[in-house]
Length: 144
Image 1 (cartoon, rainbow, N blue to C red):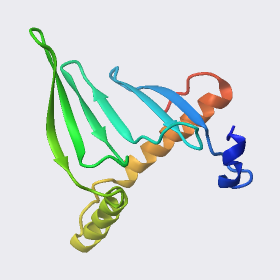
Image 2 (image 1 turned 45 degrees about the horizontal axis):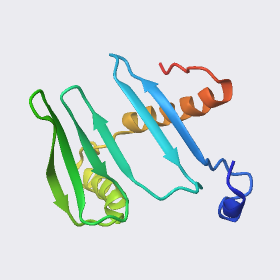
Image 3 (image 1 turned 90 degrees about the vertical axis):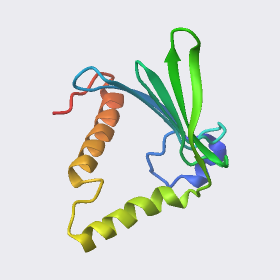
Image 4 (image 1 turned 135 degrees about the vertical axis):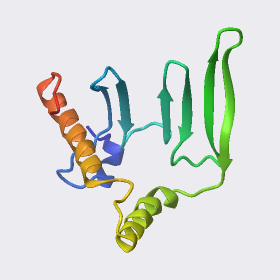
């Protein structure tokens, strides 16, 4: 539930979450851990971590930290984990929202598919719906 001190920020009857974590098992064995907190009494963060067998990427998304960075962490048998900043720059939170809108506008003008297609958007919606259904039922939900 939403903490009492934040109740005025959530619309009456809204489904605002305090915090959730989901484990998504993809075809082929890839696992995604998705965690989100909203209306939470925790410090605001916006980060993605992509972890593979050879290394990982740390991406700051919409946090207040500047300059922003993308850090590649590479596994080494001799040295352990070696971290390297592969991009650093200034950007605002508007980039997150303006980028997709600019791409859709350009796609219409150029007669091409946008980078984020309706099919991809549908998959994200199906995953979101499955997370809610899993929370309601307490079990795994398969997406076909």
